[in-house]
Image 1 (tube, rainbow, N blue to C red):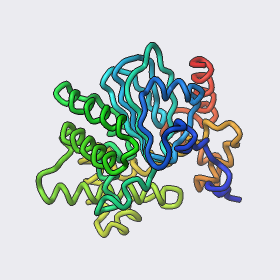
Image 2 (cartoon, one colour; image 1 turned 90 degrees about the horizontal axis):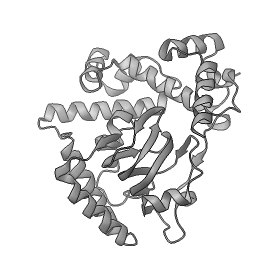
Image 3 (tube, rainbow, N blue to C red; image 1 turned 180 degrees about the vertical axis):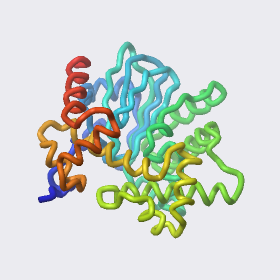
Amino acid sequence: MQVPLCMALKIPVIEQCTVSNSFQGGDLMVEDLATYLNRNHDLIFPHRHNFYHFLLFTAGGGTHSIDFERFEVQPWQIYFMSPGQIHSWQFEGSIAGFVVNFNRDFFKNFLMRPEGIANFSFFSGLVKDGVFMIESRERAAVLNILTRLLENVADEDFARVSLLYLFHVLEKQRGASRGSETNVYNHTLLRNFLDLIERNYQTLRLPKDYAAMLYITPNHLNALSNEFLGISAGELIRNRIVLEAKRLLVIHDHAIADIGYALNFNDNSYFTKFFKKATGLTPDEFRRSMQLTHEQNG
């Protein structure tokens, strides 16, 4: 019997109101990073957010991880997270910077296109796009935007304009804008492919299924994935399944067999084989390795 994923197997989800201070409410929170961490010092365990989140370090050290990819903290590193991604941290020294959280609907009636935020490369949901260094020539502008945002957080229209301006500054730095209509079309296709994977990875495993929904050929979809991401369309789908398995495995109340069933593997041995081929570890070995890491960091 398959276990419905939405019913049984969940990672702790942190809501905006849980981490916001008492003076900020609504759909946006902007705060000095040191203050934020002091109030939320116990959130070092792996957890998800139900809101968008980004953080800029201006000082400090240690590590943080997003979807099990680990990063060394560096001054002027910024990271972005979309709802559903999982992260944890182990900071060291005097951490300084800014943290911004905003709910899914914060830009809903402000942008002409509701998918506008997701079109920024760092909100793609791919970890490799969401963590990067702010170049020296942009640091003064970024610092000014975030400082003014912190001072005027109660003015939501000002905050929306400021955040969009910041996102455009960062997107321009990353060279993510594409000049030709063909590349814009292909980038939109890729974004739609990623969205379809997010909604259907439990049940649709083959690139041809996604190609049909995008009205393109499987060969076109595979070429698109290889061009922009350096991996095949099939591997991208499999990586999303493995990622969800990892997210669920860090919660020790869930039996491995139930996780396999929740991810639409009717045979637990096939789930184990699938996971080991992708990661080099069995699900149980991965779970124990994550537990050991958490104990060492704790």
